Length: 338
Image (cartoon, rainbow, N blue to C red; front, side):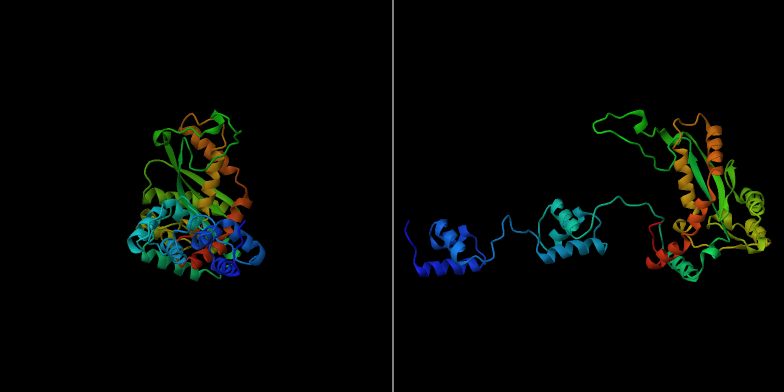
């Protein structure tokens, strides 16, 4: 094989130090790749190796722009980021490339959660409530009787249900939660929760109005307080800002009671621990092997599962209140993970 001069070797080493590949150096100097390879082995062992693969389509600045487009709210999808890059930086890449960049930055795609719409006023009131109660202890929260209404469908109760599936197994009856259009009917119930356990439950017949709601408070609420031997003048009652809850007749009755009413911020189901008690109840309803034969059986099952709720479940939910308050403050009044 023809030897190369020392000058040529130095040229080869210089180009290698510039980061060129062996093939690129050989083309530049019009020689074969073998002498370049030998020079690299004998004289330039510590030289940086040329990067393999296709060059990156996105610069570091472009990658930061992708992440910023999502975190600033300018775009909500990878496709939106692609269009933004094309328009603002004249950079054309695929949606997969942008998705990979976002993944590498620690972000991942997830289904949007359903949360109440929050106006600026709602956010302020939620934040004010959280700040006003940030020093409340768990014992303070235990004084509250939490209340709410919920809808329970005859089929496909809202709680999630699970099953075990073997690889390659066809869909079996135990794998599905059978549904009907419009849920096959539903019932509305009102319930309350205390630190001592679940309170009285009431099935709402017909449309709920202020008069029916007042009757429920006079019966189920007061009987709950009496049943657990709670002191009326130390109880705090919680309900949300539904219009019938704020009706004049209801407010007049509440003002005449020895217990206090908690001023509740609007659009704040994440602050009410009874929401998670409803979720627990619906999960239990989904555990039945066969659907209810009629609406009467739905109500019977609801009553049976409500009566089985242990005090510890209610207590655990109420003990989460300081963390919920902290989460609202951290979110500056916006949505939390609850």
